[in-house]
Amino acid sequence: MKTDFEHRQGAHCESGVTSNLLSIASNGKITEPLAFGIGAGLFFAYIPLIKINNGPAIAFRTLPGYIFNRTAKSLGIPVVSKRFSSKQKAETYLNECLEAGNPVGCQVGVYYLPYFPKEYRFHFNAHNLIVYGKEGDNYLVSDPIMETTNVMDSYQLERVRFAKGALAPKGHIYYPKQGAIITDDTIKQAIKSGIKKNVYNMLNIPGSFAGISGIRNTGKKIKKWRDKLGIEKSKLYLAQMVRMQEEIGTGGGGFRYIYAAFLQEADAYLPGNQLAEISVLFTEAGDMWRTAAVHAAGIYKGRIGSQDDFNKMGDYLVEIAEVEKNAFERLKNIKWQ
Amino acid sequence: MKKDEVPQDLSSLGKITKELCYATDSSGKYVAALSSGWDVKITALDVAWGDIEKRIESAKQKVLNKETSQLLFFMEYRLMDISILAGYSGFWKWQIKRHLKPEVFDKLSTQKLEKYAEAFNIKVEDLKSMTIHED
Image (cartoon, rainbow over all chains, first blue to last red; front, side, top):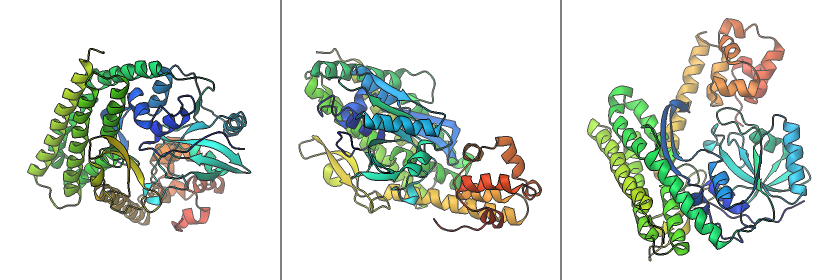
């Protein structure tokens, strides 16, 4: 049993899954960058209270599930989304979806994901993939991170759908209802609303842990890490930050570039709003994040590590905060043509 | 990032799949490009695993010194904290904390040890003897 589905590789799991699930309804128009932008995917948050692999949680994108829900909602597409307490019911429901011809998105943990190399398997539970068919006991799986599709048997799939720990997926399954049609007008409206939401998330979220002020404050904190944590722990924290920033499948400065690509595509739908020009600012931000990552690598490789080097590291983030602030303010001030 | 600057340092993921990323072509237009990995990321991952190895070794010493039970060793080996282990084993966190004491662990019933062994995906005798088989 196989549903009508085409695997396309993406840079990021959730925007990739979203774009691929909406492919039929949008006739392929909802590309990954559009899904990321409409879903207001760009974010920053530093949450020292939550520890991941013994380091601080630093997020460069929005909460799991947010991109798909927002994108579908903005495009006026009804969504089915379910979690389960029973593994049996979760599998039965999945099979029913496939029999009805729906490819479905699944939230999974990567620790027991069989096709991932061991080095990449952590207890990270916010990964997304699409199940698009079943042959015997094997499920056909499209993971947007991978160049090609994969196969998992029912036990392997159950283990990752019921992974434990923070953000446990609890068999979370989601898909757009069939029959919806996405027009260019809907896309235009959705782009505007996605930008507006992302502007709010980055410029106006209260508190100093998230958005632009979160980036700036993290920069200030990093300068104190060397004294406060000692050099060894600081190295671990910086390595963790880089891994979060360049998280599997973003291929470098990732999310800022996806957002820049989104604005370029958005410019074609809504010309005369300088979106292409503002896109360049996000490319610049992406490049700066990468330069900062190279500097961080110098520290965690042990090549450099003086207080000056930590000051410089912190300053990178403070500068990035300024560039992103300027970029989002320009987005905020658009008088839509 | 320009398309011809997309890093191609072979990572362990790169041996299985290339990663897609967005980069600009000569006219400044964003296109999808493939990367086989980036040295900066590879080292960040190495640093994380180096730390894990140290934690496993230190847990092993603590077990040998009778400061903690074999549970801690396998928790470090499976990258689990108490909440994750609670999720996989079905025990409450306070129970796990008790079982981390060697004198309590040594008296656990086989049934309870089975639950932990399953959570760690190992055999009960390996749990007791702190033996690992690479999987």
